[in-house]
Image (cartoon, rainbow, N blue to C red; front, side):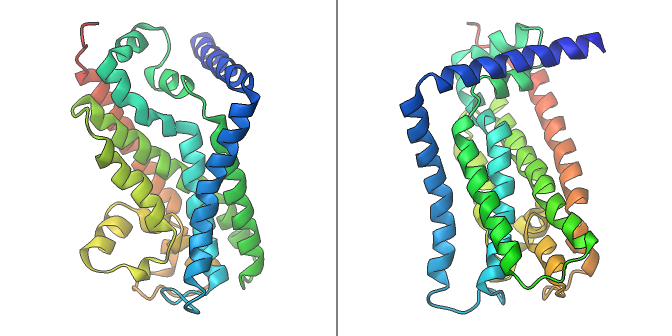
Length: 270
């Protein structure tokens, strides 16, 4: 217990140091906040633009689509805020900084996450949460205690899921340093995939991303359960409540890939 407390204290010290260093450059920090929120605002604006030329997308109206957009963006942005900077592991491996991380008396994953606390990304989370709350209020949902719990649990499960994708794909850098685009295909590609009803996709692409990789359970399936609608693709009603069952094995798989990568890491000799 004492060792765990010491490790947590070390990580908290790194996080506080990062927060102080970023807050000391106030103008730069403010510009970063505005720039980051613009990306999420553009994603939401795109949905509004699409609905200027059609009344529904994949069988869903604007308020229903915004619920899925809110679920997907909030989950992705929370994961990006907490573990997204793991993408920099390619630079750490290439420059030899990973060697220094491994000899410190703290967990390597926690150190890497605390080395660049992206407070600027918090603005994206605030905007995404605002979009989700407004969309849930405007959508025609027959609220029950169970559906209220689902509305709260879905972004949490989605955050764990996207966080697992971040860690799992970034860990590939232990074997393949130039794996950036490979990881982005699943992280940012997965974010865009979950922003729309999966009925707009088809063939093998939908089968792989929605069901093979589990992205269909981040927003689409929970939204169907909230709306009380049957899945036009044929999945049973319980699938709308299966997000925790998908995020847990995803987290376990990401942890396994991470630990395997650490064991097979070869020093740069720096």
